[in-house]
Structures are given as C-alpha cells and as structure tokens.
Image 1 (cartoon, rainbow, N blue to C red):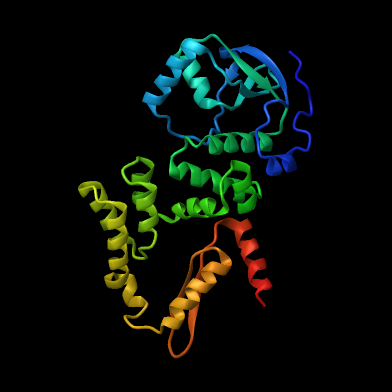
Image 2: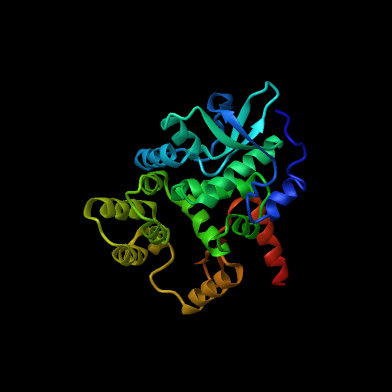
Length: 287
C-alpha cells in the first residue's frame, strides 16, 4: 500500500513541542503480523510476562483497540515504531493481522517516537524511564522542560528520575528488579558514601525496611559514614543554608565542601551535555 508522505509535518521540532503522539497523522491499514519487524532499538528491555498474558487474553476477546505505529521500509516490510507490548501480546493471542498507522519518518524521528511512546505509557521500570529521558536530552537535544511536557510529567519528576542514574550499578539493579522502590532509591541517593549506600540497600531487601526507616538510616550514614568525615564533623550552618538556597535557585542538588582556611568548593549536579549548557546559562544569569 502507498503511505502518505510527510506525515510528521514539522518533523523533529513538532515532536519536541507536541503533547500527544497524534495517531491521526498517517495512513490507517491492517497488516499481516508477519510483515512487521520488531524495533531492535526498543527502549523497553523487560516485559512482565503475567501482564503480557493478561493483555493477550483481552486482545483475544476485543482485538487490538489502538493501532500500532509502523514505518514503511524500502524492502516492502514495515518496522514497528510504537506499540511493542501490544505487538507481542497480539502474537501471543494468535492474531495473524493487526491494525496499524503507517507513517513516513526518519531514523531519528523513529527513535524519538519509540522513546516517547514508552515514556508516556508509564510501563517502563524506573531505571529504563530514567535512561529514556537521558537519551531524549543527551542524544536528541530535548531540555528537561521539553521532555517533561512531552511525556506529561512535571520538571521535578523528570529531574528526580534522572537522578536515579547516579545510583551504583548494584543498587540500580535492585530498583530495576523491583526489590527496592522509588522512595527507597530517592532516600539512598542522599547517602554520599557508596559502601554505606549498598549496605542500606541490602538491609532493605533482606529486612523489608520502610522508606521512612531508609531515610533515617541514610541521614545517620551522612553523620557517621566515611563521606561525613570529609565534610568535617562541625561546620558553620551558613554553608548548609547556602546549599539549600543554591539548590532552590538552580533546581538541582548542590554540595558545598569546606577547604583549608576560608575557601572551599561547590559541587553541582547535572544530567548530560544539554543540561550542563542550561546550567551554565543559569549561572551566567546570577551575575
């Protein structure tokens, strides 16, 4: 079948500004499921077998209610862009044909659509979501505000999600596997010493401790752990107040470290090159 060309209209810029996937753009069709090749760059790496089976049961009874988004390829086949979970469930349900929206797009637009579709549907695990957001920002030049608007979340939610990428691999794996919650992870991020963080994470898994208890342990680790020694046992509250003030102005984590004499250093958190550019502009504006 011939697909309408130029379906994206404003292209990349439209993707960054639009609030919906807009399935009206493109040609509607029904395709053999064997003519659709999965997206090898699928952002989502894990699929819950139980929920996939439940979706397959629903599809057997009601069919695929929302068309898959596919891209026509030069060899006459179609590549899946958005709807990987529905595609897998349809196969599991034994369907031979599925409804699709066929849309012409570039490789870059395909990658963005696949990322955004997954992020909007909120069925990625927390780490995959953070990695997807980082890709939007680092690879495709989205700002945190644009990413937040595009997936329907607040800027704060995006910032908190990106912070999860600062977790050590062992702790990140626990979050990815659902052994610790987002609340636990946020509390653990306040622990500066990695060994202390891993110890508390192990306690969460073994003893099932609550988020509130994790916050208490994280606060205690900050006072007694290795990192606390580096920051000195006693320091002027002026520096704590300055940290809070800067964190509020810059909307990111800020640490002030006392040096010898009256000097010191400031550590400011950022997420990728584009975010660093934005931070530089924020600092220039403070002059």
